[in-house]
Image (cartoon, rainbow, N blue to C red):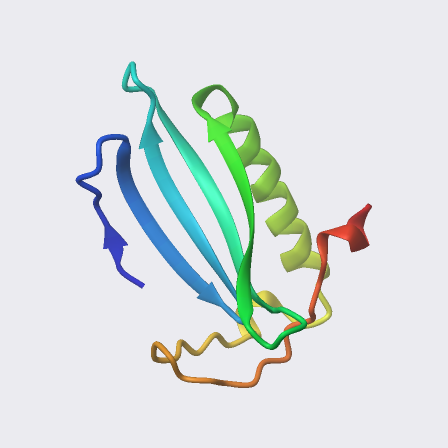
Length: 116
């Protein structure tokens, strides 16, 4: 995936990552007083009953005062997964695919409600 720098007034940087059936967007934006913050958006294509599709999105805002604590917590969680996952993360192969190409994945269909 390519990194993109935005010319938009408050957008400074954007990166999208396709991961199975989901796409994650990492965007750096600026407030009016030029303080930077990050938004992380998860987007997943969902069917409607009529057969059309919509994109379900979940967004997380990370402000500068929270970045270190968030980063530390994420790193701890990643370390835990690496140490305790039945299949080592390093052995799980990610193979990117071309835009528009369909591929089957073994990713579980996890919903946020499952974690409540």
